[in-house]
Image: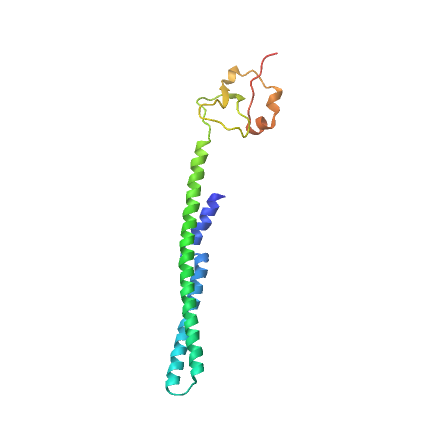
Length: 167
């Protein structure tokens, strides 16, 4: 699950990835609109000087150019902010994977010898410490047999056997 989140974050952080490409497209659209509105403002200014248009037409064109300029700035800032956020999410996903790997290694129990589990000390959910005996392992040849306690759900799920006494 976490590896999938990391892969998704990695893809989202790519400059040519779908997520950032969408924001880049919005910036390009805003830039094109600003360029068009700037040209229109320049044309209206020239026409105003030649007395071929009204002040209101020029003011409308100038206002539209200013609005387009602000939208272009906003689209650029949104793109940069999104790119930074995607990089941070990628880093967070990578760190989460590393933390889970580290945690997993802390909870793996390694036996000193091969053998059969005779007894499991702590109950499920019980807090254990480094010095606590978690289970007893013995040689197969010394294992006596299974008891009714071995039919518990925990034992069946984890293939655990309890020590039994001869009758």
